Image (tube, rainbow, N blue to C red; front, top):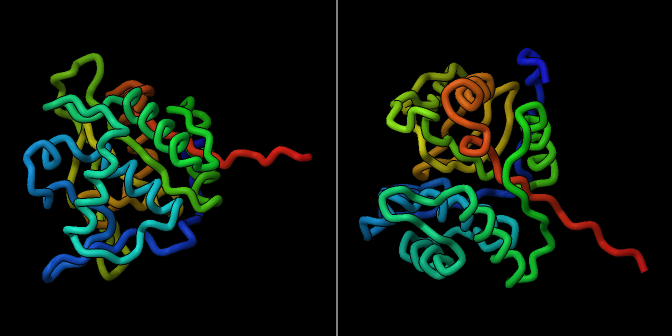
Length: 223
């Protein structure tokens, strides 16, 4: 995939998670709002998986924060979270597979894809109304490195302004706009520059650590 060819514009068809607090409306889960310390620190993977699978099963109706917390806690049994380190990619893969198997959801799950295929997989999933679980992994091999992926927000003029940066963090992709991935993170809408993400994945991290969870619909067996 040529770096100048990220020109697709595609997004989810249904309304994404809308979570109401006393005076704020969040788009997707916000781990910083949870009442316990582990979820605040390590809960981004669980939130990303639960938000995506909730969207696919139409659980994502408008709800209060307390209702949302109860929903997330009810899904903890599917996932392994390492205290202080969060959810490894293998735990994300196994947890989503177990959830789909036990709840008989018609999806195939695999972790990651090669850099040359990643963009096309994101576009394919969004075109099928499947949100994208994406992780910005740690620096590698320098695990103590502090380089990050930038998050942007749009101003009223449609310009992308840097608003945050992160590493070791799961987000959910909601759409692609001419090379900008629209994401839900910390209950807000941000954008990732796809060229910057790919450069981080190839030069600063490792493709298994910085990648996507590929979800596709199972084909029906013909009788």
